[in-house]
Length: 289
Image 1 (cartoon, helix red, strand yellow):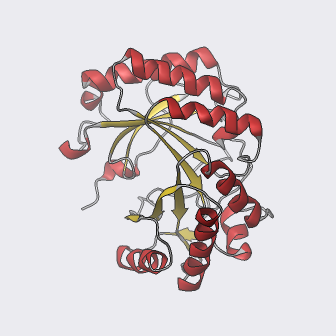
Image 2: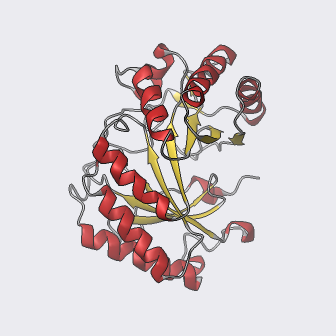
């Protein structure tokens, strides 16, 4: 049985505007999220995204001081254990009741936030304040802007402590990439950007594998994706892990569905046969209608 809490990734918690707690399957515990894109603007339009952009955002701009204050407040709740007494998290299984990370994610692409470097530093300072030296900072990115020096400079601030940089790579071929990105962009640009960044920072590849109109991408796409990963490592990129996962929350696009566990294993095994980096699978969950 997959815990229902894993499908609850609402970015609204109590009075908070920019910070939110979730129990994440990939974090295997509590992840404190930072929404640096409350305006819901994103440079991708992924069909599996659960952000409902038909609803107007509550905030259009980030109030930096409020963002920092809110993550400080959530850290206090997590460290004290009080967060497990709140209605949302009261039924969380014991093994998931652990604080794993602070993640820059949210309703858009975090690397578009102009104060990302300052935010990373502020969160690192809070990690020290709360005496959590092993707490990871995570930044999720679609990799479109990783060739910009200001973005790279901001991300290099992660290296002062435990960190992970999760870069999205959902495809090996241009046609499937355009389906998954929802934009007419270059897959080669994404691969080159990840390679550039991964020569300076360890990168985790996050590969969302959904069904589209009932069909998954198939083995040939996974082999092509393996070729892209090998291209990155061949260029000197440090890929620490590939995360293969599928949908666990209701996407905004009704054409998207979940790949069943056994089939996801098959697709991941195809990838494993063609790459030399670890591949980890995270199963999905049928969302409530």
